[in-house]
Length: 364
Image 1 (tube, rainbow, N blue to C red):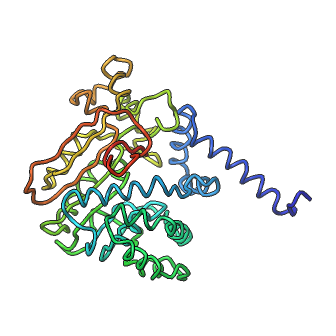
Image 2 (cartoon, helix red, strand yellow; image 1 turned 60 degrees about the horizontal axis):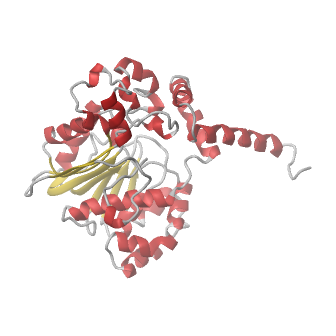
Image 3 (cartoon, rainbow, N blue to C red; image 1 turned 30 degrees about the vertical axis):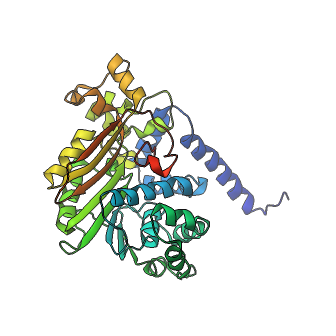
């Protein structure tokens, strides 16, 4: 009967319907449709479970290996640019996410220990195995990008038993520990015990007060010559599903208005601008030897022309600060060199095309 049993057909039809619905959420649409849906789910019992179930069924949290590898490589390159090494380092990652690409790449690059923490239970044993298996054809690329002998990378990869019976046992082989629920404000790690702290597309989702405490904790646990390296996306994330709005669209709203759309709940975005991040690191006791900011030209033009009317709550910022849609930052406890700060006058593009273009535009 069309290949389905009576019990299978309704399930298949449900999955098909959900898949169509979720796919439409990720493709072009009026941003308010997605915003209202996420806001509603954020405010009902089991809303978070429903939303993430939709993501799982529809595959919107699927492995995007090219994109996520490049993000991990950018963090390694920030470390190397700062004249530090991943090999032999004790690493803390803030925000594991669905796919542990950053811990995997750092482990293959020779990190002594990677401790990754998250407030969400997104990582599963199945996701970890799927992601790890997908890396095998990319080992030469990984070795080149992290500047490590291919023989060492291959030895580390092939020494891992992908059939380990649990997520902790699998990760243990890679010297990775996964902590959920984890609190980056109070890690429980010893003072001055960590060489590197990293995050990718995380800081924009953490409120100012919590993030301030995270950076203070980072300062406590980092060794005197340790660094934290972060890449993050201060843009309006709804602009990725609605091309009619700019990356700075959410700056037209007051805090009260934004609270419904993304000031709380599943779609939370802090709307902090580049100046806020710089000040936050400095107030926590860090110098910024590397601070790169990408300016979205479309947003800048809209602000300067008055097409996008920025709310008075953001009046203290320059048009350029309001238009920054990506940042790459290295923070260190002791700075021996003048800071490298750059404003990139480029519009948004997908991912860096080559390794030589590192720290240039990366969306998402």
